Length: 196
Image 1 (cartoon, rainbow, N blue to C red):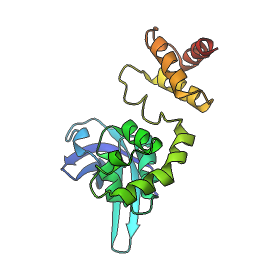
Image 2: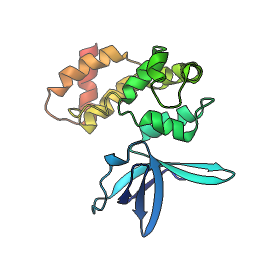
Image 3: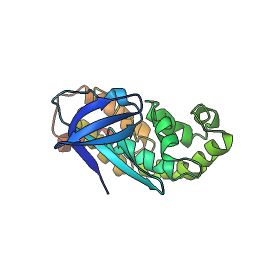
Image 4: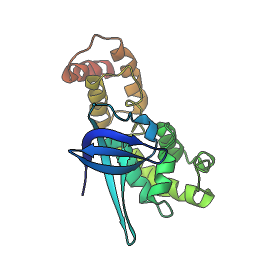
């Protein structure tokens, strides 16, 4: 039902935040509430998932669309509920999680609270191919690198969509970071020149 809320953060607790949207406070359960600053005038966009059960309606919040997509994939795994998925996402190394799933690293996954070997195996079984297909293993790589500007990120995402391998994209990324900032299409043209 909801895609995102844009408003100000009025409450930050260890379990949730409250986003004020035009005078209405929405309580959002989030993986790491302390990523948000309360009582500032700055408006923030928080992506949202609404979970409805017989006895409860809860809203879950995410810093961006990628985090929400990963959450949606996790809750589709048998044995993983929304709160377990949030606990997994509380670890800031989302690329490490994606890599662990891709490499069948069960011991990495069992470090999360409430995740045993059986559930970890189910996560790998259900998500390995889906994550590889959709992201070419780079779902969170560019987002976490502060040296990458928005135009370069879009160009690198375009290379992923075109089917280039992650290792080739990373080589190009190293060269492009050194360039003066340019438009996305210019980054893309330069990247394609380097790749070819």
